[in-house]
Image 1 (cartoon, rainbow, N blue to C red):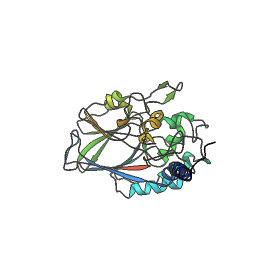
Image 2 (image 1 turned 180 degrees about the vertical axis):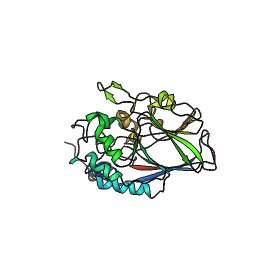
Image 3 (image 1 turned 120 degrees about the vertical axis):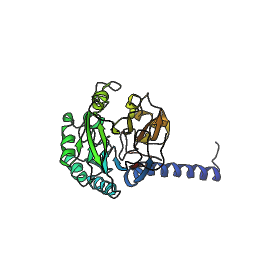
Image 4 (image 1 turned 90 degrees about the vertical axis):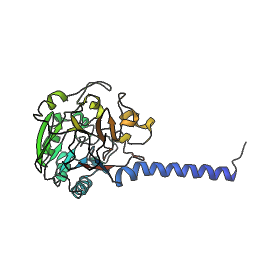
Amino acid sequence: MALVTRRGFLRAAAGGAGLLSVGGYAFGIEPGFILTRTTYHMTPPAWPADLHLRIGVISDVHACEPWMPASRVRAICNKVNALHPDIVVLLGDYTGGHMMVTGPVMPEAWGEAMSVLRAPYGVYGVLGNHDLWHGALPNMPALNGDPVRKALRDAGVTVMENDAVRVVKDGHAFWVVGLADQLALRRSHREYIGLDDLPGSLAQVTDDAPVILLAHEPYIFPQVPQRVALTLSGHTHGGQVRLPEFAQPLMSPRMRWSQTYGHIAVDNKHMIVSAGLGTSLAPVRFMRPPEIVDIVLGSPRRIS
């Protein structure tokens, strides 16, 4: 019988300890205790350089105990307020995304936490697929997403489902357009029916002022016209685990790995995909920590 040498044993023990440390970090620390801020300074081609706008972005809260309790949601919202944004946008998936929890966070609780959000030109939100697939947790009824809508409206959020709102700041107009969810009705594991109406939503834009598009899933981006200055999306969690083979379940076959996170520019169009805050499938994040996004439009340097 071959014996393990002392050096081999120590090497194996060190490797095992490393794996345990990484696993503990990915399951316990990164999803539950870390929050980063990602800032973009940009002037897309369809955005006037003299229209300065700061946008605070919150996506994929996935409220649940113990990972994303109402107290943490409130603390995150206060951090967004500290950026002094002109508008705040919420990109959907407020409900818990998995069953590895100690309990639900009901819409009334996370909604009350979000009521602290302040922005002089409004707080706007769209719904995500989880908000329509189930209730506060995956084993609870969705009730057509009505509890989510009510919680958002009670918090002072303008809920947008194929809607457009014209906003004027410092004499300059711009539009916020929000889509209904693209995966709203789940027929099977791979079959979904969307409620989004991009042409109908953009038809409500009645002048040539620039447009900011809110779409929970980024899959719509190839259909977005260059008329839209910036598309903002979530849903992918940035892969959640920053390794393509692990992140594939969160992705659509229509998307490349490079399109799951960050600033994406294609054919003179621009999109920012947030890594979001919470988790789905399992409470794990690795090298893709929860983030709030801070966007400053109208900076001196124009991008193409």
